[in-house]
Image 1 (cartoon, rainbow, N blue to C red):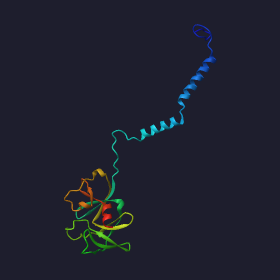
Image 2 (cartoon, rainbow, N blue to C red):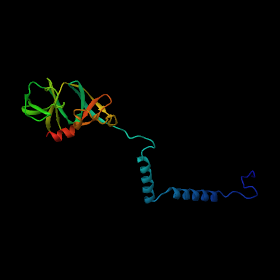
Image 3 (spheres, rainbow, N blue to C red):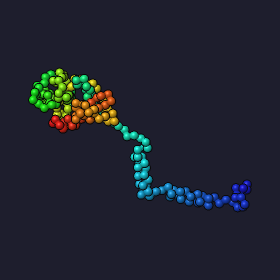
Image 4 (cartoon, rainbow, N blue to C red):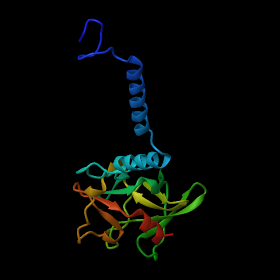
Length: 195
Protein backbone atom coordinates (compact mmCIF):
# COMPACT_ATOMS: atom_id res chain seq x y z
CA UNK A 1 0.00 0.00 0.00
CA UNK A 2 1.21 3.47 -0.71
CA UNK A 3 1.63 6.11 1.96
CA UNK A 4 -1.32 7.99 0.44
CA UNK A 5 -3.70 5.18 1.37
CA UNK A 6 -4.17 3.93 -2.18
CA UNK A 7 -4.62 0.37 -3.42
CA UNK A 8 -1.67 -1.87 -4.14
CA UNK A 9 -0.80 -1.57 -7.74
CA UNK A 10 -2.16 1.90 -8.25
CA UNK A 11 -4.89 4.55 -7.81
CA UNK A 12 -6.67 5.88 -4.79
CA UNK A 13 -9.45 3.90 -3.04
CA UNK A 14 -12.99 4.96 -3.98
CA UNK A 15 -14.62 5.17 -0.55
CA UNK A 16 -17.98 6.10 -2.03
CA UNK A 17 -18.04 2.85 -4.03
CA UNK A 18 -16.96 0.88 -0.95
CA UNK A 19 -19.81 2.40 1.10
CA UNK A 20 -22.35 1.58 -1.65
CA UNK A 21 -21.17 -2.04 -1.80
CA UNK A 22 -21.37 -2.32 2.02
CA UNK A 23 -24.93 -0.90 2.05
CA UNK A 24 -25.95 -3.28 -0.74
CA UNK A 25 -24.51 -6.23 1.19
CA UNK A 26 -26.33 -5.16 4.38
CA UNK A 27 -29.64 -4.82 2.48
CA UNK A 28 -29.19 -8.26 0.93
CA UNK A 29 -28.46 -9.81 4.33
CA UNK A 30 -31.50 -8.06 5.86
CA UNK A 31 -33.73 -9.37 3.06
CA UNK A 32 -32.59 -12.91 3.79
CA UNK A 33 -33.33 -12.47 7.49
CA UNK A 34 -36.73 -10.97 6.76
CA UNK A 35 -39.33 -13.77 6.59
CA UNK A 36 -42.78 -13.83 5.09
CA UNK A 37 -45.71 -14.20 7.52
CA UNK A 38 -46.17 -17.78 6.27
CA UNK A 39 -42.53 -18.61 6.94
CA UNK A 40 -42.73 -17.01 10.41
CA UNK A 41 -45.83 -19.16 11.22
CA UNK A 42 -44.05 -22.31 9.98
CA UNK A 43 -40.96 -21.59 12.11
CA UNK A 44 -43.09 -20.92 15.22
CA UNK A 45 -45.15 -24.08 14.65
CA UNK A 46 -41.97 -26.12 14.30
CA UNK A 47 -40.58 -24.67 17.54
CA UNK A 48 -43.88 -25.32 19.37
CA UNK A 49 -43.89 -28.97 18.28
CA UNK A 50 -40.30 -29.39 19.44
CA UNK A 51 -41.09 -27.88 22.84
CA UNK A 52 -44.29 -29.90 23.27
CA UNK A 53 -42.55 -33.22 22.66
CA UNK A 54 -41.65 -35.02 25.90
CA UNK A 55 -37.98 -35.43 26.56
CA UNK A 56 -36.60 -38.70 25.25
CA UNK A 57 -36.61 -41.29 28.01
CA UNK A 58 -38.68 -39.15 30.39
CA UNK A 59 -41.28 -41.15 32.29
CA UNK A 60 -44.75 -39.65 32.73
CA UNK A 61 -45.36 -38.20 36.18
CA UNK A 62 -47.72 -40.30 38.31
CA UNK A 63 -49.57 -37.77 40.45
CA UNK A 64 -51.44 -40.62 42.17
CA UNK A 65 -54.51 -40.17 44.32
CA UNK A 66 -55.01 -38.52 47.68
CA UNK A 67 -56.56 -40.96 50.15
CA UNK A 68 -57.93 -41.05 53.65
CA UNK A 69 -56.45 -44.05 55.47
CA UNK A 70 -58.52 -45.61 58.25
CA UNK A 71 -58.67 -48.80 60.31
CA UNK A 72 -61.45 -51.31 60.82
CA UNK A 73 -61.11 -54.63 62.66
CA UNK A 74 -57.34 -54.56 62.52
CA UNK A 75 -57.18 -53.91 58.76
CA UNK A 76 -56.08 -50.71 57.08
CA UNK A 77 -58.26 -49.23 54.35
CA UNK A 78 -57.92 -46.20 52.10
CA UNK A 79 -60.53 -44.29 50.16
CA UNK A 80 -59.99 -41.44 47.71
CA UNK A 81 -60.40 -38.21 49.65
CA UNK A 82 -62.54 -36.51 47.00
CA UNK A 83 -65.37 -38.90 47.92
CA UNK A 84 -65.13 -38.20 51.67
CA UNK A 85 -67.66 -35.63 52.86
CA UNK A 86 -66.96 -35.75 56.59
CA UNK A 87 -66.00 -37.97 59.49
CA UNK A 88 -67.95 -37.79 62.73
CA UNK A 89 -68.23 -39.52 66.07
CA UNK A 90 -71.34 -41.72 66.08
CA UNK A 91 -73.43 -41.59 69.23
CA UNK A 92 -75.98 -44.25 68.28
CA UNK A 93 -76.89 -46.54 65.40
CA UNK A 94 -80.21 -48.27 64.81
CA UNK A 95 -79.42 -51.77 63.48
CA UNK A 96 -81.30 -53.16 60.48
CA UNK A 97 -81.32 -56.92 61.21
CA UNK A 98 -82.81 -58.11 57.90
CA UNK A 99 -80.79 -55.74 55.68
CA UNK A 100 -78.50 -57.21 53.03
CA UNK A 101 -74.80 -56.71 53.72
CA UNK A 102 -72.96 -54.42 53.78
CA UNK A 103 -75.93 -52.36 55.09
CA UNK A 104 -76.00 -52.62 58.90
CA UNK A 105 -78.04 -49.68 60.14
CA UNK A 106 -78.90 -46.01 60.17
CA UNK A 107 -77.68 -43.16 62.34
CA UNK A 108 -78.63 -39.54 62.84
CA UNK A 109 -76.43 -37.07 61.00
CA UNK A 110 -77.10 -33.35 60.57
CA UNK A 111 -80.80 -33.79 61.28
CA UNK A 112 -81.27 -36.63 58.81
CA UNK A 113 -80.91 -40.40 58.77
CA UNK A 114 -77.71 -41.69 57.21
CA UNK A 115 -77.40 -45.28 55.96
CA UNK A 116 -74.39 -47.02 57.52
CA UNK A 117 -72.32 -49.75 55.82
CA UNK A 118 -69.92 -52.27 57.34
CA UNK A 119 -67.41 -53.24 54.65
CA UNK A 120 -66.08 -56.30 56.44
CA UNK A 121 -67.00 -59.80 55.28
CA UNK A 122 -70.69 -60.57 55.80
CA UNK A 123 -69.77 -63.71 57.78
CA UNK A 124 -67.68 -61.65 60.20
CA UNK A 125 -68.69 -61.08 63.78
CA UNK A 126 -71.41 -58.52 64.57
CA UNK A 127 -70.54 -54.94 63.56
CA UNK A 128 -67.67 -53.60 65.61
CA UNK A 129 -68.33 -51.09 68.31
CA UNK A 130 -67.17 -48.41 65.92
CA UNK A 131 -67.34 -44.92 67.23
CA UNK A 132 -66.78 -43.12 63.97
CA UNK A 133 -68.46 -42.90 60.59
CA UNK A 134 -66.86 -41.77 57.36
CA UNK A 135 -69.55 -40.03 55.27
CA UNK A 136 -69.13 -40.79 51.56
CA UNK A 137 -70.60 -39.21 48.46
CA UNK A 138 -69.95 -37.44 45.18
CA UNK A 139 -72.27 -34.48 44.75
CA UNK A 140 -74.17 -35.18 47.99
CA UNK A 141 -73.73 -37.46 51.04
CA UNK A 142 -74.71 -41.01 50.05
CA UNK A 143 -73.93 -43.21 53.09
CA UNK A 144 -71.52 -43.70 55.96
CA UNK A 145 -68.90 -46.38 56.54
CA UNK A 146 -68.20 -47.57 60.08
CA UNK A 147 -64.56 -47.09 60.94
CA UNK A 148 -62.44 -47.25 64.05
CA UNK A 149 -59.89 -44.53 63.46
CA UNK A 150 -58.62 -42.22 60.73
CA UNK A 151 -54.88 -42.77 60.51
CA UNK A 152 -53.77 -40.22 57.92
CA UNK A 153 -54.41 -38.42 54.66
CA UNK A 154 -51.72 -39.09 52.08
CA UNK A 155 -50.99 -39.50 48.39
CA UNK A 156 -50.55 -42.94 46.82
CA UNK A 157 -49.06 -43.32 43.34
CA UNK A 158 -51.33 -45.38 41.10
CA UNK A 159 -48.32 -47.58 40.28
CA UNK A 160 -48.21 -48.54 43.98
CA UNK A 161 -51.75 -50.00 43.90
CA UNK A 162 -51.61 -53.70 43.04
CA UNK A 163 -54.50 -56.06 42.25
CA UNK A 164 -56.10 -57.36 45.45
CA UNK A 165 -55.39 -60.84 46.74
CA UNK A 166 -58.03 -63.33 45.67
CA UNK A 167 -58.72 -64.18 49.31
CA UNK A 168 -59.74 -60.61 50.10
CA UNK A 169 -63.19 -60.40 51.70
CA UNK A 170 -63.96 -57.12 49.96
CA UNK A 171 -62.31 -57.86 46.59
CA UNK A 172 -65.27 -56.64 44.52
CA UNK A 173 -65.14 -53.27 46.30
CA UNK A 174 -61.41 -52.67 45.85
CA UNK A 175 -59.23 -50.77 43.41
CA UNK A 176 -56.34 -52.75 44.84
CA UNK A 177 -53.86 -53.07 47.66
CA UNK A 178 -50.60 -51.30 48.48
CA UNK A 179 -47.35 -53.02 49.41
CA UNK A 180 -48.10 -52.10 53.05
CA UNK A 181 -51.38 -54.10 52.82
CA UNK A 182 -53.64 -51.02 52.76
CA UNK A 183 -56.87 -52.00 50.97
CA UNK A 184 -57.77 -49.18 48.56
CA UNK A 185 -61.55 -49.04 48.17
CA UNK A 186 -63.28 -48.26 44.88
CA UNK A 187 -65.34 -45.36 46.25
CA UNK A 188 -67.01 -44.54 42.94
CA UNK A 189 -68.27 -48.13 42.61
CA UNK A 190 -69.44 -48.20 46.24
CA UNK A 191 -71.40 -45.00 45.70
CA UNK A 192 -72.96 -46.29 42.47
CA UNK A 193 -73.93 -49.56 44.15
CA UNK A 194 -75.35 -48.13 47.36
CA UNK A 195 -77.11 -44.97 46.22
